[in-house]
Image 1 (cartoon, rainbow, N blue to C red):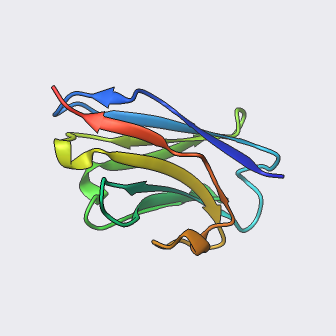
Image 2: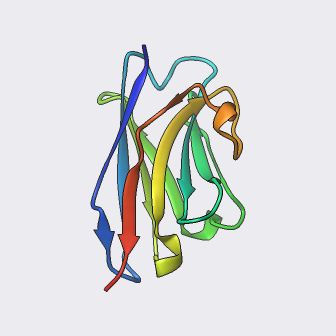
Image 3: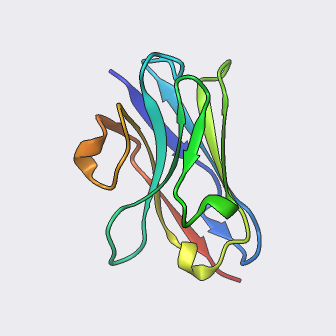
Length: 123
């Protein structure tokens, strides 16, 4: 059973960098051919895919967030990390990490999810 757990600060000030870590257990983040994504859901809105880091270590980001997004990994700890820079209140959302054989904006695009973590951007 694969389990994912998000961790990081719940409150970030505007213009700062949001940093979240996803710790994976029950499976390796280097296992072929999985993609490890970050997804968010702003209040009252649908899911928004942010980006992924693949089993190979390659990354791909949403074009709308690409300029502010970086996803990296620590294979020794079986973790991957999201950094979103220059945040504004519009980045307030529940942030999820998830595993899939691809990526998308539907719950069914992924087979395992973290429980989600609320991040609020406010001064």
